[in-house]
Length: 123
Image (cartoon, rainbow, N blue to C red; front, side, top):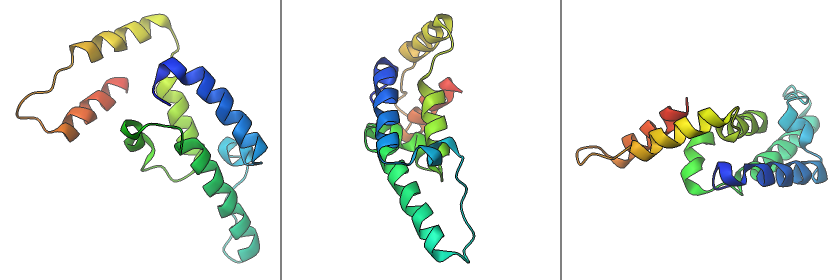
């Protein structure tokens, strides 16, 4: 995923991939982590969870990784990506575009703080 421009195609491809790999329940949050006592079931859950996270993370570009790197579950990752790129109205999209266009990095500012300012504009 590059950005909002290919969000609809990304979402459709991801949905199909999650269904094909039988891990859509992980992303929807309808499967919960099992107790440690049932190690076989826990291993099966973790295998599905890792598969779901890999499906979600592999197609996104490196600059977006910080947006999802601190999230623990595939459900959280998916929800964050959907929230990040779905636009509720055209006015919001235009406003965000104008804010990003005006944003400049200062000579004293590090690249990490510049990216955090970009990230905060969305929220």
